[in-house]
Length: 166
Image (cartoon, rainbow, N blue to C red; front, side):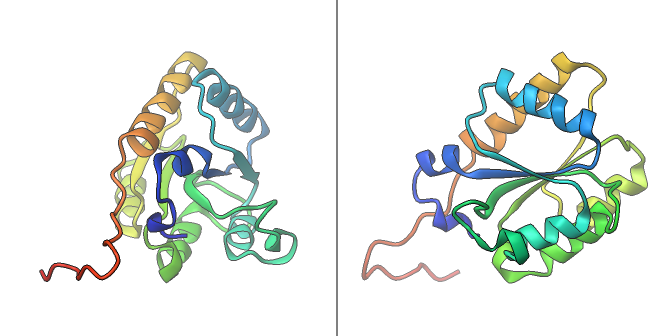
């Protein structure tokens, strides 16, 4: 899904967030934090790297895009079964249709090599999971502010208007 598919801010508020996380406790905490932060976006959850790729590709059970819409933003853990978050990130960035998909790595790892690798592979943001629920709510609020409220979308040219040359 390209950002230009979202013509209005209302579309962003209604756009799906995909959480790729295998830890049930982290999933429940994040769902609660999203509610507490009053983030209205629908949240879909997959629990491993292979499922993330199937979801994004619209494969198998995920072919119904009414039920499983393409996400606007992905919250991606790095330590996943089957395929790592790094592998998922590399796959996403190799897909032309997902070049503008926002990917926020949300993980327990604060190791500099992990941060560097995620950035090199195209992560838009790298966040370390906080230690308290209150900090998690604040983190979700910052994600909401940065990626959903303040994010500037590309403008489509008016019909017949040429794109300016660069």
